[in-house]
Image (spheres, rainbow, N blue to C red):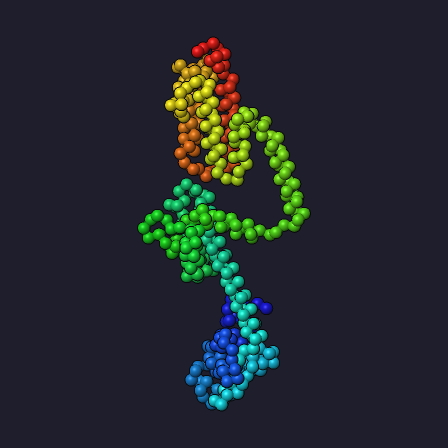
Length: 367
């Protein structure tokens, strides 16, 4: 039976009557003289029946449709074993819910709580999804640009603003969202952004929402992933020929996130290889190392006899240090995808190979 979200949504008048009786009776045991007066229960339904407290005190009340509805509900509930009825000296009926009547109301309340919890989860997920999209669009400055149009999101999703704000504040208390670092930023103003805790919670929630697959589908997926792994293991050596580069980067490439570590490690390997090839002091590093060792005028690593081409080579190696190594060496960068990292490592593999093809000082007899 669909019981809605509260007693007002119960489908039958008898159900609503039972709910309010149990609510008035409370949890205490009730003897024959302790029953709830019938009119007290009816008063909870007065607006629904179109009656006033004054009307219930008149003699006309006993011939009214409201009285007939009440007596019909009492009879039905008593026949179903949900209430007991005692006549009182004050010409009223004392009503007592039975254990089964209390259990029925308890089940309704549990359903309402579950449904309410589900609704709250959906609203909170909606807020996190809106903010997650803004984080994905602008991961570097989203804390300063993230914003939700509260009025629009409530209108589009049929939400009351007080319900939306209650859930937004709950996310704020849980640390899943935060207010922007500007004056007047509140959930009501919409100046909020998703935190790492919020992103993880959203990922868990969306994973839980996905339909469970059958065992056969799961085994098929495992087999497919195993084949992809085998292909990757076979192709990685062909893509990355430098043993040190491959060994130091392959585990980082297999990770699901933080691929700036791949860029950082590959740059360190390139820098170390150039230094070892020239015997340059460790005091010279990064951009300066590439400029001194690859300069068309006196650089120890000569990739071309043409000065213009040598200058271009120096600018490539210098650019790797300036554009990739320095930012990744001093900052955490979340914008590199796994595919970006792999392409970069393959590029560095080429640069290492070019350095490796240059005759060493010992080969040329230089000291």
